[in-house]
Image (cartoon, rainbow, N blue to C red):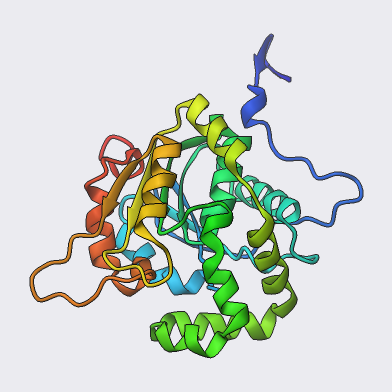
Length: 268
């Protein structure tokens, strides 16, 4: 596609052209929480969580990056993978973001993987926190639907509050998203990201009570990604699945060790 600038045509690469919904689509940009200024970091939250759950983390990053957190369950239609991905595409366009770093927590890693595979030229780097981004990962969604009291008993106060709010406001969306989790296979997306040589990193809680570390290591190998387990400081408590928002200072310290472009001084 060419745009005229004076007497010279300027060609816009296909990979960064804006998403265009189909005439029958009801997709629209999602509600977002946005903090900070600088290179874009799009954070895709975990299953049944809310963007506001991640505000403590966003505040710690806001001096170096523009953190954008879409509400990935607040879709205008019933939840489906394609609909969620289309809404995400429209969201980053609506936010005026051409290139971005992606950070996915748990369930959000599945959308992160698909977006990066579909738009590799728009993605600077990917970080996956305690996510496998394929069918192995969704023990979380399965447990949430099969035994909500047990899951809530394991959760921190922020996670329990977000889960209850999501369950009340978007119950059908959660069920449909969980079903996608049971049946999804993102192996082709993994292959695309490897072929496109997108830098990827997998961060893992020291003692994830939901996901197996060995599965996370296998995912990182498939993705040709680094794999880092959270280092517990002396006297520190258990570092579990939701450490991204339960232990935001510790999580940021581990992000900084990855050498991400989005947090570098040159990028800012």
